[in-house]
Image 1 (tube, rainbow, N blue to C red):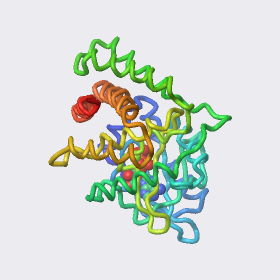
Image 2 (cartoon, rainbow, N blue to C red):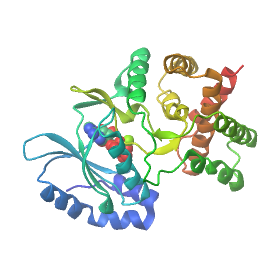
Image 3 (cartoon, rainbow, N blue to C red):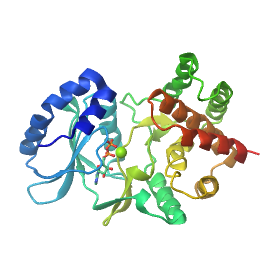
Length: 296
Ligand SMILES: Nc1ncnc2c1ncn2[C@@H]1O[C@H](COP(=O)(O)OP(=O)(O)O)[C@@H](O)[C@H]1O
Ligand SMILES: [Mg+2]
């Protein structure tokens, strides 16, 4: 089994020694679950990021996905979230071993990503269907993290001494987060990362979500990672962003002003995370500034 050095570097950068330990036994873990669950491998997917994802088939030839992640809270929380969705609007989880970070999922075929669809109105229509299909209550028994916990990231950023994101915007984000919490009808289970690359086409079921983070919060927050995504390649990103805000407000019956506050709050948090992780943050920050302009 070939595990690219690019993938290994990414894992070690993100997870440190836990990542290193996980990589050392990855090949044997894959083998163990292939045998235990009677699978045959069609090889890893082309676009690996922080998980090792393999196309497999069961003994009847049904196409499935074997996904292996560093066994930690996030991986276990993803499994719990997938179990709550239970195949509604999201690829179904069939088997899992939380202790070892291994899950067996229904494979969406052909698996085209929503980012490959070019007509923005079609993208919005399909996105909205998936958003509606995955509404669920927060699981009672679990330890689902909350948006309030996520937003502690703003305080951390404030204390870091970084200046790329202005303190004026950080403060605005904190204020808007408080304001929308006061007008919230209560938390629901959010996907937490519902953007174009986490929505795939199934010829049998239509567009479906994959890869949920699982977080408890007001449902408005579950549109923000989509709003700010896939804009770099657009000739007029600001107009596309406005079309997305307007269409989503209308189709989901959202209060547009409240949605913009949510988008400014979470967009700013994403930009701060981007600075912290040395990832791309400029486009996200530009979106925050556009959301502020749209408020006028
Ligand atoms: N259920 C699935 N059906 C088809 N392809 C999948 C499925 N789950 C994951 N993939 C493929 O694997 C890639 C990475 O999986 P994903 O769950 O998004 O992992 P990560 O958490 O690393 O982003 C996806 O972009 C997609 O190409
Ligand atoms: Mg993903």
